[in-house]
Image (cartoon, rainbow, N blue to C red):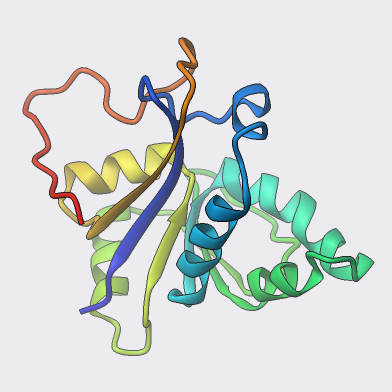
Amino acid sequence: MTKVISTLFISADGVAEIDPDWHFPYFDANMGRAVAEDYDTSDVLLIGRETYDSFAGAWPGREAADGEDAPFAKQLGDMRKVVVSRQPLTFTWRNSELISGDLVPAVTALKADAGVSGVLIPGSLSVVQQLLAAGLVDELRLLVHPVAACKGRRLFDEGDAPYHLAVT
């Protein structure tokens, strides 16, 4: 069965809504390598609409500019992108498709698809939260920044029961 991997940049106090003021000062070569490994082991990106809009607004232009990050931009463009949205979307980036119905059965089907080698959720906090609650995230990779953000959306909000995780 295919693994679903969530990779999130997160502050020491649990904020996973990225603010450039606390994210970029700590993004370094080690984080870059970790992120690259995540993309290298997956062939499907599962993202929410906001993440899609952000990625589609940046990466196709970087690919076309043929700068130093053009190979990574091409890799992203070539990947299958499954976008979660409650509203219809017009896609501007190749290899993009919409999940407009219930997320859980759609991801269950992706996990069971023998043609899918790995599903990566970069960011997309609300998607990750829904899939964690449904028990469909196989790995949660947290790139912890040494900062207390103090404001923003947290990965784990108040809930009914604890999530038991294992460090690997």
